[in-house]
Amino acid sequence: MTLALIGVNHKTAPIALREKIAIGRDELAETTRALAATPGITECMIVSTCNRVELLSVVEGADVPVAAFLSHRFAIDASVLAPHLYEYRDKEAVSHLFRMAASLDSMVVGEPQILGQVKEAFAVARAAGTVSGQLEHLLQSAFAAAKKARSETGIGSNSVSIASVAVDLARKIFGSLEGRTVFLVGAGKMSEIAARHLVQQGAGAILVCNRTAERARRMAEEFQGSVVPEVIDYSQLYDAASRADIVISSTGAPHPIFRPEHGQAFLHKRRNRPMFFIDIAVPRDVDPLMNKLDGIFVYDIDDLQQVAVAHMEERSRQAIDAEALIAAEVDRFHQRQRTVNVAPAIVALQKKAEEIRVAEIERLHSRLGVLNTEQLAAVETLTRGLVNKFLHPPMQALKQAAREGDSAKLDALCEEWSVSPAAQGEASRAGSSQTNPASPDPALSAEHPANSARPAEESPRRNVESATTSETGAEARR
Image (cartoon, rainbow, N blue to C red; front, side, top):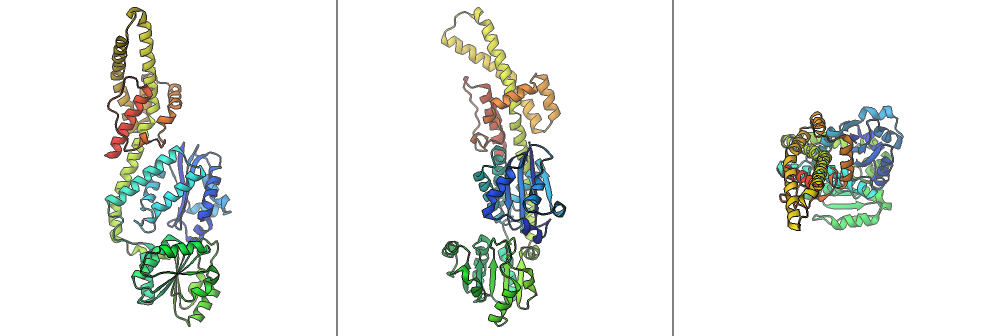
């Protein structure tokens, strides 16, 4: 199985292209299921935000047409899309995912929204039934690494966000924000954050409008600020817009809802007083031609990125520490994966040793005569102890080779101890519910306690699971 990640983001594609392949929240589950139906894909999820669309999947070969899914799904010529796509496999895909979850690949490095967006995408894929063991384990590790980066470095300090950039721009346009009216179109979280920033800077009134009246009312009720928002019915959208000095738009509309003819009407009603549009929707809510009207200022998500760059010097210094931390977490993830992946070979080795032990006891049974319960227990304890002592060196050698990623050494060790590929496969199938490295079983988590004392009744499979997961937990805690 191969892990594949393919997509476009704000670094590789302009907003004009990103808005053509943007996947709305209501469409995400259906699109994820459609991706999962692609031949050769066994697990998948899709992250779609205003800055990126990324397909993460587990595929059965290198020639699975993951890239073709985007061009087919959105009717975009593959030759047009290809120059803007990036693709990562296996370890590079893990590294990109960890960096993305930690906001190191974001338009504004350190912003907190992306982690929530990735978690939401994962939840949608879970509900759609398109993720199981391998992606489950990978995503939980990515979330833990992202949390660690934010808690152990200053990447989230010296806040620079789209909201703060929008406030700075509004202040430059109007001079003072005292008494300005802000109109939130769409009930997006980023819009609410921007509005709170504007209120803190003196904005006097907040208007809220959404196609779904209930969502607008809910946002107004939950708005945390000194100003109580006024809910506007969607049918009154354009009449209310002319009252606003600052319009923050983040709807899921497929086409612009504010066009030049609307802008001209707004300016006429406002007697040419300026208006500032912050368009954080993808696809865009505000027609770029609106910018040609005197008195109307439009900034879309890419414009805000350019402004944010000037604010990023201190955050970039903190990002260096976060990059090093994430790189270490990626290496730790792969080391744990390799250690757990060797479990089938260890299970096969222990299974073979146990078969030899039992066969020898049966062969000597006639010589030993009739043994009582205590004597039988003593023989069992003695022979099991000897087998475990003899197996310890080869088990450690297998684990070490796995940690180092030395496949040639692994093959040599398996051959030396006569653990054939067929035996490994049989062991893997027999113990798949416990030894699958991608299993969400709690035994694979960092909090799983080491089993130092093992009863004589434990099976060889349980022995190797305890040894492997204990070592994994210790590495995770380090």
